[in-house]
Image (cartoon, rainbow, N blue to C red; front, side, top):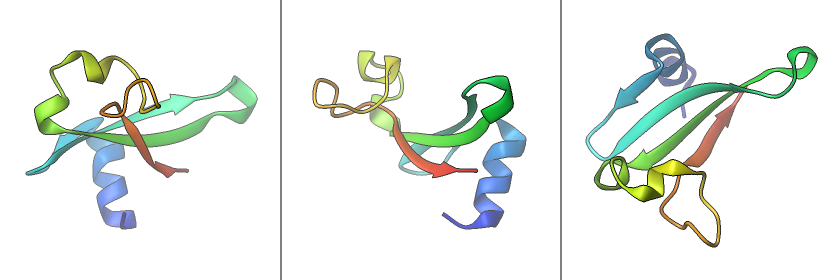
Length: 68
């Protein structure tokens, strides 16, 4: 992911491309807060798969693609 694209997702909060929905969120405690950008396939964005991050139990969930 380029810094220019990451900045766009940070600014917008969520951003859709042709194949994916990207979302920026803050994770961690106050003293160790990190910005995380994750993505999900657009055809899975409005399904139960979008309720949690990708895992063995949810292979179509959100995938972390960037950490700041």
